[in-house]
Length: 286
Ligand code: NDP
Image 1 (cartoon, protein in one colour):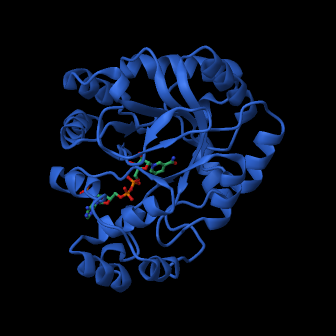
Image 2 (cartoon, protein in one colour):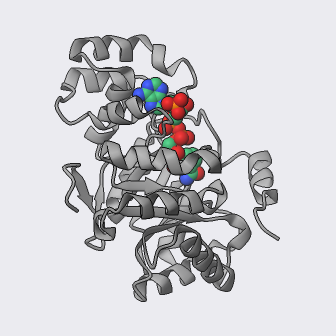
């Protein structure tokens, strides 16, 4: 990987940038332009999902960029509707077609619901066959993660979970470290909710470094060894979010931010039965 973005090495030796660009909730007709701007700003890792319904536009941006494939790190995710060994293999093929790629860098089980054991067997096969360089999961709480690992051969390379200064997931991270799983944050800016950008502690620390609240929040995650994938539609924010490698938070600042943890989800609680039912009913194809 030739960009200057620092990297982490996953448990199978694959190298992944510590910061990537997320495309959740970017409408299909704005995604190509957004991903082209992100690649132009210097991002080389892109996080999409079948459920975001914008894989085709991500693919068009990749093709238009002319950036060599081996300099990119492309992640997509398998939706609940396609859980199961055979359906996961088919869904992988459809995602790859939409992205216009011949392999992925990281394929994730999007949600720990439905027949994700069958999906994991399909993903182990895709990994063995070199169709994806790494496989992982998303939204897995520690109990589900331990269960999946105990009864399967391959330990996920990544678990992508809601993580930000208000929901820090230290217990989750301890278990992931025990298994050698890379912690990846989704919603690193808490999607801007709960007065995120006006939080007095973050504002104060931002002022001390001449940085923005977003930069402080991303830097805090990166200093906890967590991979981040912030989303923005604005090129100046894309660049700002990447510009977090020329300063470091002090131990005291880290402690002040650690004290902001509320220990609960601020975006979507994967243990809320109503939420689980709603996700299960959400379908993207016939
Ligand atoms: P984020 O925490 O990245 O927040 C995005 C919001 O913050 C947008 O409203 C954006 O607005 C704003 N923003 C971004 N940068 C700045 C900045 N520098 N200053 C001020 N505001 C800023 O939310 P996401 O939910 O998008 O999470 C990131 C990625 O994680 C997703 O895009 C997706 O790839 C992944 N994800 C995965 C999930 C999963 O279940 N696995 C669930 C949710 C997300 P604007 O665009 O106007 O700049």
